[in-house]
Image (cartoon, rainbow, N blue to C red):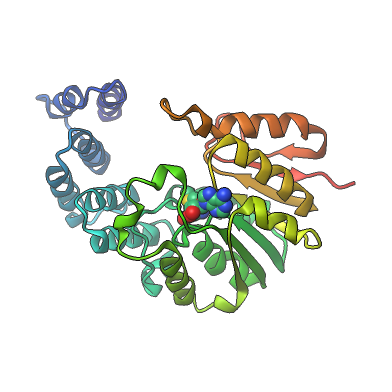
Length: 306
Ligand SMILES: C[S@@+](CC[C@H](N)C(=O)[O-])C[C@H]1O[C@@H](n2cnc3c(N)ncnc32)[C@H](O)[C@@H]1O
């Protein structure tokens, strides 16, 4: 019953009616029962969609104070603190969420991510790196590092324990979708990345290459990687270049993971990463096994041997 109410309210929110969603959640008899923290997250999302960020933060703070293990509460809190311009509290909320997702190193090392693009991947990555991507030592390459979210996780959970290396390529200029606000972070992306990588204590395992991936990747032609993460520019014309250039650097049996395969901006169709990812997986189908279902947000493929 509670999930049925929740799903009805979420459908209203998805239909751009946060007010209607809130009314469903607050209706007499709408008892959240055991899923009270999910109700709180949804209420927070509705208030956020209405621009009521203080109220959203207050709802989520109350849920956090009840001691929930639901990491989405902290994800929502980070979002609201960010909206309110309180980056320090946003980073602390993200760290708490990471710990609940099995990444206590984030809290212990005190990583600072004002904008966390990685949390949503932690559960899947934990499983994939346990079951499929098992090379040890492992040579990893990522295109798009931002403040070091995926990089610090890879160092803590994969490269540090197994040995190997992580190469990070980023222009540190942000992507086009960050242009409007990136100057307000108070620090450069590169400084934030450097500080977080230092906090891992594994800086010696991480090589940073600064520049556009489309310019840097051809310079790595004599290297081979076991795992490549493509999360840089999201314009289809750059994603297709990253994919083709990286494919040549991927070892046979190695894994390549694309982020945001569903990315679509109504006003900026050139940012539709799906066009590039679909073209790539079609043209290279005979050389790869696809490990993720069609509608996943991330696409994982393995390069066939031979
Ligand atoms: C979504 S963020 C990466 C998030 C990161 N993987 C994480 O999990 O925290 C995208 C990054 O790609 C970088 N970027 C955008 N275009 C690029 C390009 N052409 N070459 C290299 N990096 C680029 C941006 O500077 C930004 O830091």
